[in-house]
Image (spheres, rainbow, N blue to C red):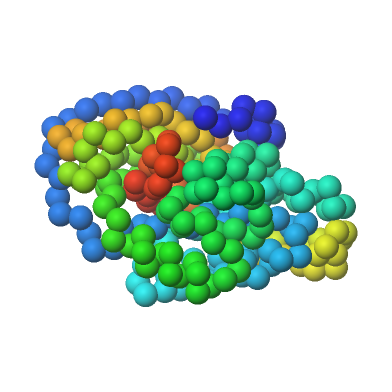
Length: 266
């Protein structure tokens, strides 16, 4: 489960309300598309001099989708480099905790930056394009649930978005427990770093996670279509045209991603 204090720190200036419901319908699972979305999480920090190449790789992957892969990029800024003299404005202990959970699940001795975690299954140095691309290729054939995501504006507040996520389970994942997460990311961000290891550098960022929440736990079943509804209130400081909503399923034990999707906020 996510650390409560960390979540509060991440969204201190944002009012967020969630209304979650679950409905079940009998459906037929259709054949899986050849390319299912792959979630690539970059753990990074503005206070680490090794991270800018990783941030550039994150942007490159999002803009090019190499080999036709459908990639979803999450940039999660950790807070353990803030002591070096620069407070990363996008950092949160929530993301440090998430990286620590990956380290435990993947058998790593410690956390480090930059790191890329591909579909929750492989952790590699985030600036090594070859290692990242190899892991993406390995994950491309994994069976995944089909996620569908839609959103609409509130009738009374343009900053409120009503989000609906539906999940259809393939035979391979029948009976598996999964946690359903919802995230909001922002592109085209930059920081003028004035101190620390990257002092004097303007750092651009892609897919910065502004909000991340576990909505609920599901037991996937081949004969059931799960739908989950939520309401998010966005910050007026976020650039609406650069926001994406991301929904993904994750095995709470192995941390493997069982399905993912994303949509632009219009």
